[in-house]
Amino acid sequence: MEKRLQVILAEAGIASRRGSIAFIEEGRVSVDGKVVTEKGYKVDPFIHAVLVDGKPLQAPIKKKYFIFNKPKNVISTSLDTHERAKITDFFKNIDGRLYSIGRLDKDTTGVIIITNDGDLTHRLSHPSFEIEKEYIAKVKGNIPERNIHILRSGIELDGKKLSRCVITKIGREKNGDIFNVKIHEGRKRQIRRMFEEIGSDVISLERIKYAGLTSDGLKQGEFRELTKSEEVHLKKIAGSLTGRR
Image (spheres, rainbow, N blue to C red):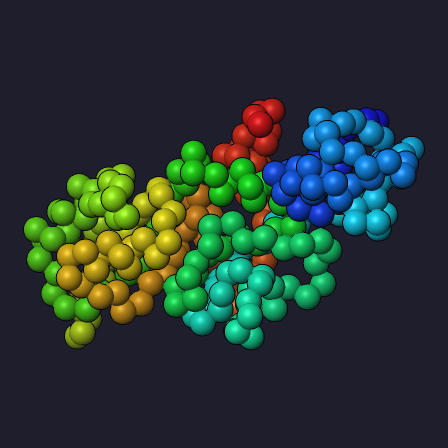
């Protein structure tokens, strides 16, 4: 069956669909010995010889989806020049390139989705998908309610106003307050920077839910494959099951 070339590349684990389009436009893909730079070009991978950088495509990989309970001091990206521990170090026998959905900075622990499905990663990483993320934040000091109200109302970061968030104080320890924080945006180090804006430092931060999915039962550094219903849940959010492009 004929498919668009970028779809075939994505299914083979070369890159996301957007990344695969870049491969095509850069002249790195050939079909039956002819370089193709048209992203809508259709081929049948079982009939035509498709090569990327001169190498034949492998058979489409089986898509895998995991929940990982990320430990502290582990980075979300698979590329690092400082030889730090990476999430991909925990996934040694998974075919295809691995992607993190809903990245966490190295100091934040908790729920993160790991997959070799580049297309789903691209969809869920798009700014238009404001997916709810829930955290437990331990914050240094005793935070006045008026300061929390400022955060709930939506502050500015990088010149852009944040959406309203839900912040609930759930406890207190000797060195600070503990909050449950729910946000829908995903700016870099967003929660830490939010508290910095009111003069407070986050001591520790754990994500306990991403799109309603939890790491319950998993120790830090452990992962499990998503159930079929969880996989369908993510794909529905991304529009993958409704033909959304």
